[in-house]
Image (cartoon, rainbow, N blue to C red):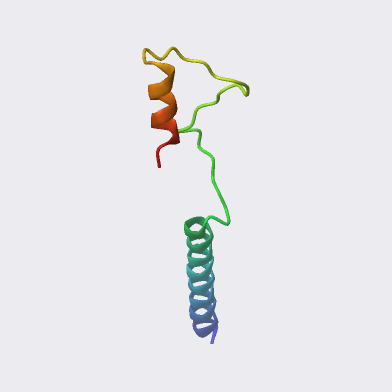
Amino acid sequence: MSIYFAEVRRLILALLITYGGRQAYRLLTTGAVTIDIGVGRRLRRLGPHSCQIAAAPETVFDVIASP
């Protein structure tokens, strides 16, 4: 009789682990949970960024304004 209960307990544990893993995978793939491992991101200060452009102002405006 105790062998039957041990098998049932083992089956329930396996089902719970499988269900938990499935739910964790679903949450990660849908973006509901994010894990930040610090790879692929960089921090920049807020504020205006300036750069030198070696083109006429009219050309720069035309390029920015084009769709």
